[in-house]
Length: 232
Image 1 (cartoon, rainbow, N blue to C red):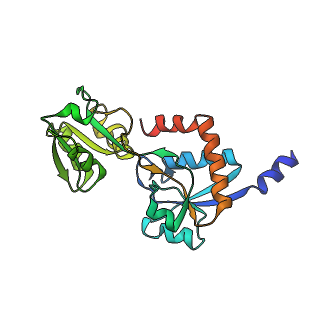
Image 2: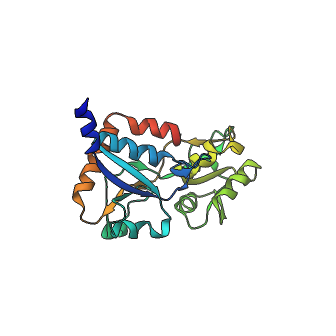
Image 3: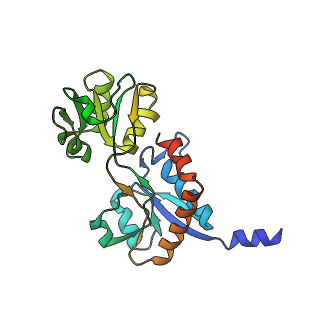
């Protein structure tokens, strides 16, 4: 039908930057395609709000300046909403809580950090995960420079648990072939670290459009389907 062709031609295009180095949120697959939770989520938001999202792989060090300078309309790239960032840029409503979770070997009965008293837990140095472990008396914290090393040590029996961001936990515990079936994520995130879609400060029109899409995605439960696919 001519009407539908015309509608497609006049569809609004929004350019979105994403640094594809953060699996399973955004990454490049073996076929050189941009994939991940954020990519699926952004495309679902675009579909629900009636625009087309063109997502471009962009290095982190220039990503915020790119939106500020008008090179991109938005960013979806595991960006935590913070008060400091809110002064420099605008955010959509939160779309996922990527807070801290506890990862344990499959045979473990532990549900929370306190269940591991007398045991050793790992976290990356200086992270929220390390701080959460320190809060619990009777649990030993072993700090690592790189989060991947914590999972290596847990796989070889040197750690009883790891505390890290939900996406990192999902990547190592669920997505990595080498660890398939060895670990499990216990329960929901126990800290609030909400991700938001970034737009240029004052660009209310695009924030409103993106929020319209997010609300529809949440109302239809599409976000929960994507969490099951990528994060659980």
